Image (spheres, one colour):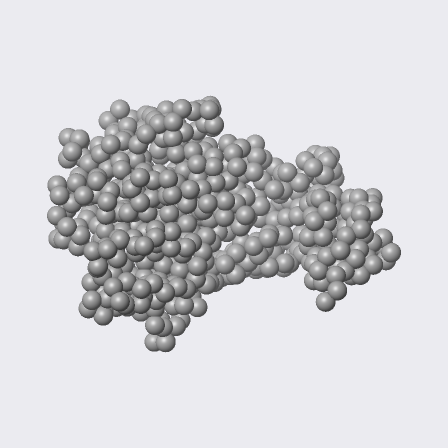
Length: 572
């Protein structure tokens, strides 16, 4: 089909049929403001902030949903287009809370940025100000907080929950001024089929959905002389937190991250990569036991708590297929209050464990009743990447120019296999690096298997072909799970991550959490893996020492007691 020719602000451009005016304008370097638009979601055109003028017809068009026509002449700068955009933003602000200085999204709010760029003044807003919504915030859940008074009805959260996750926990209700985004029957978040993944918060342009902050709890622990505060950092954090300080996505800042944590006052600084290696040891042996006994196949990974909760609500009949291995976060925390406490001569009651995670669902996971195998709550607090960045900024640490520090030595070593846990396909690749050597005594021919982002693959080990699926996003996962439920699946292994692209796209990662940024973050983790001296979990000397001194062997009685868990069916 022939390309379409049009003119935008005097510039002639040729584009493919089906291209929107917005995309055509961006192709020639013209930026049009948007709010309801998001590159990862379907188009709605509801906010009307992206209005442009068709010069020939004099019509105002929503550029994000209007496809180009041959010979079209568009003006993004006409007085009618500019005034339409301003007026629509003024109307949004007219019943929006004016608490920008204390809002969680101050400085990263898209509405705030557009207001500034369009030159909307306080006087403009006051002229239109009318009745204000005064609805209670939903603070019932451990992971996410909803403030309907700040909602601008863009629908991004609704589309993300439906299209990316297939959960549809949120939807529109009411009409006119009474329109809100809410849950079914307006139930609190704690009582619905919500995975706590935080993808709604990741796409929300304002402060209507945010993570539940645990910053104050961590400050209190750090300032308590009776507490010994231990922190663990998830694999992906080292390639994402730099964005909060102006660095390019994917920039590896491991050393600066460690130094910043010590400056904040943490007594022990560790990487969750250590327990990711441990996860491979336990889950890899569990997979081997399943295939040798031809039992409960396919084996399905369990390190993502958002996916686990989704399964408990929607696929309770498939729970026997999930690995019983705890997530790396929970493995590290229980060992911190047992093995590490013994090694250091610490009273586990005084030990306070903090994890820095890309994921809001980790906040839910730490509160699960079964995660108290140390005799205490294993994980005491979870901070997202964004929360840790706020703490670093609060005390004025110049993160970018920090010297490079090193993780503590006990439980401090980690392999490259553990690093790639932070992106989709990484758990599978890490597992097979170990599984093949255990089964055959031979190493993999190559360590970069190329599973990152792959959906289905076949791997031959010891004369047997293993069929593998790697998926991220719960809507995509449901298609494969329906095959398993129907008995038509021939898969041996399924890796599921709730968030797009895995942990690098977690709901607690820096904003914007775009597809482009996620890809760059994944490349940063792959770079770390390639340059690691140790690239296989079973070759991590600290893991070898842990089994020799404390656990015995994978799947032993002590391992089962501390490192494995159970799941529960939940109502839909």
